[in-house]
Image 1 (tube, rainbow, N blue to C red):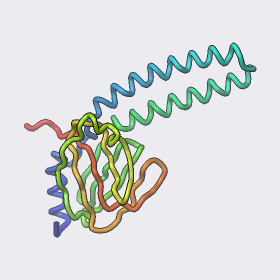
Image 2: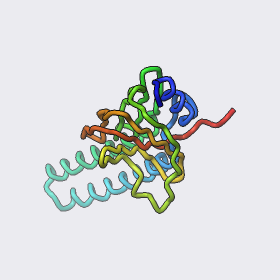
Image 3: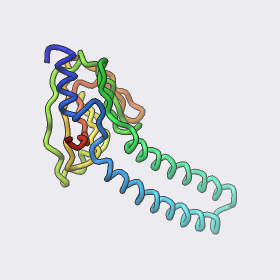
Image 4: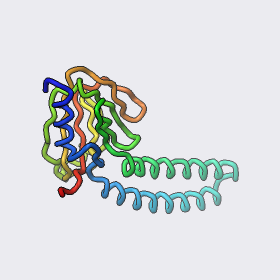
Amino acid sequence: MTSPEEAQAALVQAFGGGSAAVGGRGRWLGIGVVGALLGGLELVVVAVLAHAVLPAPIARVLDVLGVVALVAVIAAVASVLRRRHRLDDRGALLVLGFLAGIVVPLQAVSAVEPLPPLQPVDVDGVGPSYADGRLVLTAATDVPRVRVALREPVRGRELWRHHEVTEIVVSVARPPAG
């Protein structure tokens, strides 16, 4: 790609528009509901056992830690469901909820290409990850993915760590045609 306009056109085509949902969001909703139910059940069981065996102050600390952990998991899942990739004249915001993200200036994009979806056996490739300059923002298996190669490193984020990124692989949920 030689110009930001070409990069923008390639990203619009890959995303199916100027804003795309993270691919596999429905599965994250299922994970969130099941996780919240199991987390709530675990919280109750641990609270009953802790209050039966431990001194009251320690049991209350465990209660608070359990609630904080459950709220954090629900917030992480909700952020993946809510936040969308965005594309405008300046660049692309590529995200996986608040778990990872990067703002890519259009002039930094050298190539955009579709990739085949991950197969279910490749579940270890799901989630935010970073290795050797590649930031992966894949939310689920069996969803469209896009590879964005960069001319120059751009600072990206995976959880609380920042990295110099030269390539991004992102899952997208293309809007229905029509």
